[in-house]
Image (cartoon, rainbow, N blue to C red; front, side, top):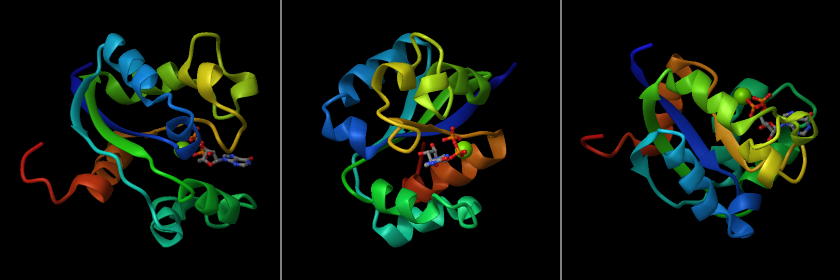
Length: 139
Ligand code: IDP
Ligand code: MG
């Protein structure tokens, strides 16, 4: 597979618990190059925009509240087969179902507070990366 980009963010629970460094280390050791990175915080409205695809789901309001509850660390990453390889590195949405050694197995607290996001397609990776980093001239 050619090199491609994915988008991730370390979620408020993992940042609050001081796991950002350990998670970034796992990401780099798995062969991802960090293209862009920052620490920021979403408003509930911005979180709602990011997760608009889930707005009919019962967990949507709670998710927006949780995702705006503290700082996050969004990143654009690059690697061969980046989207799929990153989903494998983070593990299943529900940490109870996540494989041993995955980021969610190690750091997630619950199906909602599950430590980290990973894009599900090349197309969404580009949209999500632009959501946070469109103002950067070159990345
Ligand atoms: P993903 O992050 O593994 O792609 P999605 O189904 O896209 O999972 O859901 C987006 C986020 O919404 C999840 O990462 C998690 O934080 C939250 N979420 C998903 N399903 C549930 C649920 O059943 N209850 C509460 N929160 C959920
Ligand atoms: Mg998803």
